[in-house]
Image 1 (cartoon, one colour):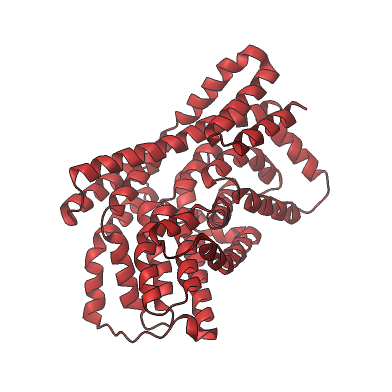
Image 2: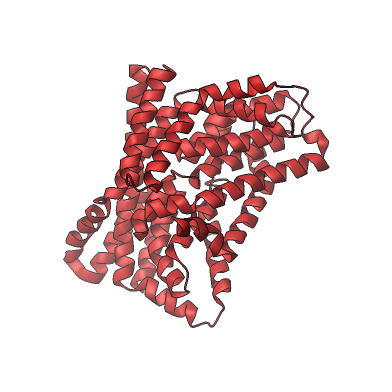
Length: 429
């Protein structure tokens, strides 16, 4: 009965507007107190600081800092310009270019909101000016922005690795193939959609020479080189993800100050403050979620759930599909960070009991969360696009995202039922 009381308290605190970290921490503390009395006041701080005292978590603020430094430069618009010049021969090239630019920006930021803001502020107005449908313009950008969650360096992978003890480097490697497949699937959907309905994307009359195409790379090679240096140092074993994040943050600072000269002293301080605020919020959630997770483990909730579901006799694929649908539903009302840190300790023992790899589960969980960030009411990408494109209403953006969500769901199912696709590349390293 005690776990039910704790769960009700958690839901009630979230419902009345408590910050998620407080709701998790207070609910976990109540549970520990009911289970162990006054010892709870020793267990809770130990859980919180024990979780945060992890070397791999150093990568979290450093990758966020790297993305913020690059977000202060014209890299986002330069990526979109380069994609347009190289893909303008395709019908719907502006929408497809927004997918490509978002994927590349995700490789230098790791944060989906940054990708939506950087690419959306340039791509959506250009598409609307050239006669693209509002639905196609909004849907392409808001869904493609989620690619930053999957393409390394990915903040959700760092968080999952810290909670599950799965190698962050392996998660980064494992996210490459699903990220490419999802980007290609979104691009193919756009291409087929505009071929079936040409009015949604008038054919481009612009023509670019090869000289112009190569010239468009002049403003993005620095960022591309930085990505190669960061990811290459991880995959080659020369640096841990945390050390590579330090390289990335320092490199991004140099690009912003020396190459683009877009970083004033005031902007520099603003970026540091923003990074500290975002990182602190995420780390508080992770630490307080550990208190809640330790309580669940103390009263054997994950083990009892695993025993109950495996005793039903249902095939593993049916249980797995139910887990995926549950994550999609939870993602509509809980932010991605909270969902990872709350559900992983509960679901991972079940996944392992079914014979699945924890590395694979981390990859499909992040694929699942890509759907969460574009579905209401807590789909943050929806509101990020509304913030940089006030000419679009939230309702309009939500409606435009739904067809793209269907594509994301199909890609999720592909990797759910074919685990070898996401595990192939890590197996080669």
